[in-house]
Image (cartoon, rainbow, N blue to C red; front, side):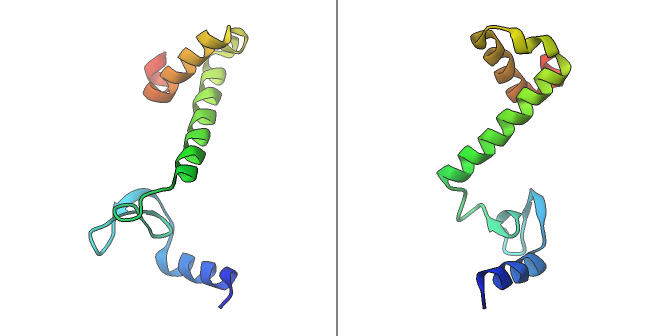
Length: 92
């Protein structure tokens, strides 16, 4: 079985769940059967998720407050940090 065919098989068998759920073995699981309870995520995966989340927060900030782009970096980053933690609604 090739890596590609195994991937296709696991996607069919596991299904895709983009939010955590408890599987039939009682394990917190996400994605295509990733066992978060026992396996967790790697440093690289955590950093990749952080990068995506930062991009989402900055995009939300710039959409809601376009003038924030021109702020000094330290001020911009405080607003982006607040957006990351509270969501744009919480910031506003």
